[in-house]
Length: 195
Image 1: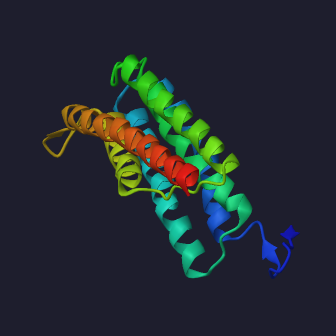
Image 2: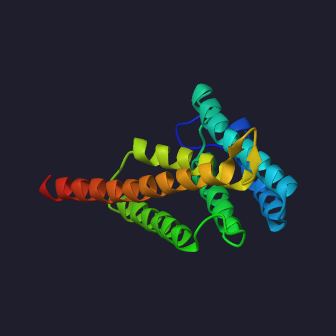
């Protein structure tokens, strides 16, 4: 399928970056299935699938920028795939008692609030660039969730303890990146009013 935008060349929706993003979305049911069962093997398989999905996030953006193949579909699907993967991982770890439910609620609340704020910013014609805090949040969340999914001890490393430490750091960065986004939005709105 192709889309032709005004003043642009033909862009194929199903390019490699978008296929990688779709792969990330389709990996989510596998993570859910594996985390439904307790035990080292399902935990390891969930962590493996999640890790591969997280790597596709890095690859799709890199390939899209390299080939100048960014599409409107990709810009919509990529952040949605990220959020679905991360939030699904967090939610599935709650009944396994590997992450506190209240922490997941606050992190989901942050995502919903920022999504709403982005909608308001867009309607007001305000562009707020992605910050390093937002990128750090995604990386920390991914690494901590992989560790919590592994859960058991491998190579002398207690992955539950490691994951718990990392999820607390990720939690702090997640909240701070949300505050940072709101502060940037406020500053941009003040500039616009005075502008």
